[in-house]
Length: 407
Image (tube, rainbow, N blue to C red; front, side, top):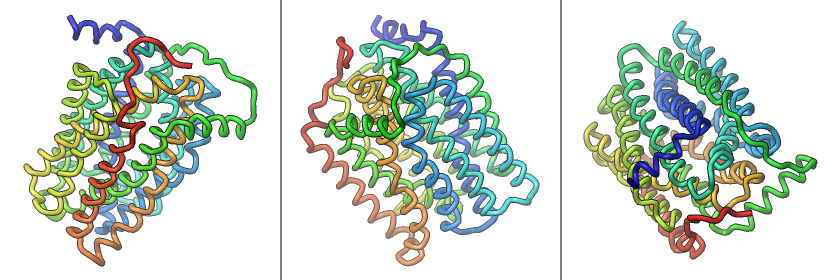
């Protein structure tokens, strides 16, 4: 009976549409990093080149995040997502053509990823505000968990497909599939009918000040964001950038796709767990779950074998989903809807602003120290940051709301 009640949110047409769109988008998102990393490695066998292309995406993403948050609070969020997805789909199609034709260069892929990064700066804040605008706040944990389950299932399929495509046909086909998912996801999201959100006529700078005020007034928000500013640098350097390099030199590209699929399987398991448990303290559970990201960095450093890394990826996915659902629930329940996209944009700005540092420097650090040393230093800092975050009272004590909506 409990599970039937939890799934009752799927009776809502717009909830089903949103979850379908998210599934398709995440399917492509699972394929894209694998295809892009190995496309770069085919051109230049260098971790620095991979980091450069990744940084070319993250820098414009950071620059436009605050603008994306303001626009997503001012305009219909589903239309913002549609325009951004269409742009991303077309540019990824161009990348696929260049790679498949053999004419791709590092600067071309970097330029294309820069456009995609700018577009994503509008998508993510807009996505954050969709579910809270179509579902009661008391039902938000269930809806978020189901949405996360769909996303995780897509990552399983996407990771497996990425491994097969890149291993057997090459990264160009993977980029083409990614382009198609962007366009399909945009078509699905365009069918949403979102209720209007009351908005005051004000300047963009006034909106940014309001968003900052909401962000800074909640200690649990800015402490977690500060922590993730550091955690994301470590994870991107040790897993996203060096992971494919280690795989290329040890257990192979196809197995790296299997690792991605196992990560998705862990996300599914985490979503199912959160759907049933619905922890009373979502951030306490979430930050504890982030500790489960440490084993995979250790495995890449000490045991770079397909089986051990795949198991660690599953454990990582489990923990990351526990955090993701807890964080989305906390924001959706405790931040006013008309300011949610702006607060989300400050969240992402703080979380991602230092990413280019890790992406651009990790190749040089690995050359100067060794890949193994970078991984071991990284995992030590990773654990210390999470433990430090967990002792903050506002994070430890933040409770889930079961009934009354906020402000």
